[in-house]
Length: 137
Image 1 (tube, rainbow, N blue to C red):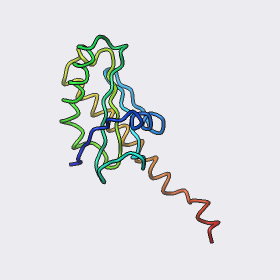
Image 2: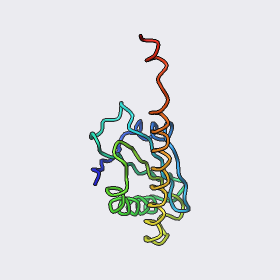
Image 3: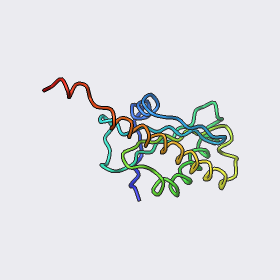
Image 4: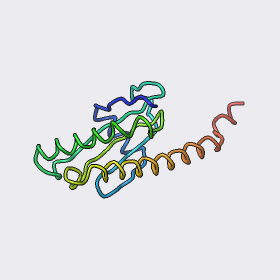
């Protein structure tokens, strides 16, 4: 099981959004990127952040949306997340009102798909030789 820590700073969210991958489902959006060196993280841990925009609704709706995302993530992320990856969960218009079992199911599917993409990306980066290393000789 992977230890999960919470992303709190805006720059962490922005880096995940700009440098990572995105998976969209009907009740949530999941963004993921490998840890950026500037992000202070636990070695081998997983970063996790939550965000809900004002477009979703008033404060009580946004709070309920974040509570549901946190509750589902608490059950799913320690088992299914990759170590060394930062994730951001973004609430959508129906996250607060959809069936909780459906929300968890969609979160697992999105997490598995994005992990598959990240693993391919990592293996592709490891296979390509660094041209700067060749010229250093």
